[in-house]
Image (cartoon, rainbow, N blue to C red; front, side, top):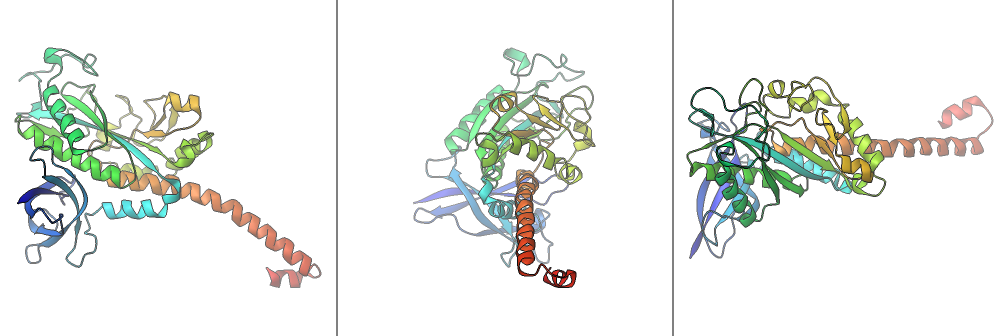
Length: 368
């Protein structure tokens, strides 16, 4: 007997990478192993040397097939087994290893928009629906198109064992959200990509497309983001408020780098309107959805917890945003730890030298 394994990977499409997948039939006694694909058809290789390698990194039950079938999230490797240029997971794994002592954790809020026949799902064929207002977490008939797809996707994620935390309708009609977390630096990317694949695959059955466009409809309509919640063990610990503020300050030191890697369409979405800060500025505040980074009110009350970076777009690569946040926040915290030790070590050396050679400036200079 055999089972089906759906191998899923991220392609090389620019400017926004998309998902690809194919099915492998595997004997019951075997686990998913290395496989290959034609990289020249996915913008990841040229025709004269087209082989790319799929390495399984995360496996879960396939909720759309049989009881034994599985979904297999893969990273892409070159034929020499080095990470492919499109393999952003490798960077996230390196950051996770470098800052493991901080135990960074993530929760990502994935917004998306259903489309059909070139317009948001449920919108009239001409013109626009009623203005934003009744749709966010709304209930009732024609206001909430797509709920059947959302329900099917939520159930599929649960059956797959993914760490889905919830779902809700968003501010624009036809726009929804699900949340994945709380997970580690690499794991949140693995599971979010699989959850995205499931959403797109299920929407196929309804003749509906899933858009991760940051600003799917121009004008006075909300964009779609991937608000990223982040914490370290220092932030989560009792008295973690100072670590939370330090994390916000650290994010403010690398604004341009983060914005450049937070997905396509940042300038269209982060305009300073529609619950966003302008992309060219940086701010943080308690319970402020108009800030770049929001500290939830409950966190301020408890003086411990997490922060929410509201800047990532719906189409952001979760491996990239996780890597950047770990490198920026944990890197700054690690540097702050070593600076006092370095100063203390220098002072100790100076005192030692003074005891051994307090006599002449020349001898003291040589000692230093």
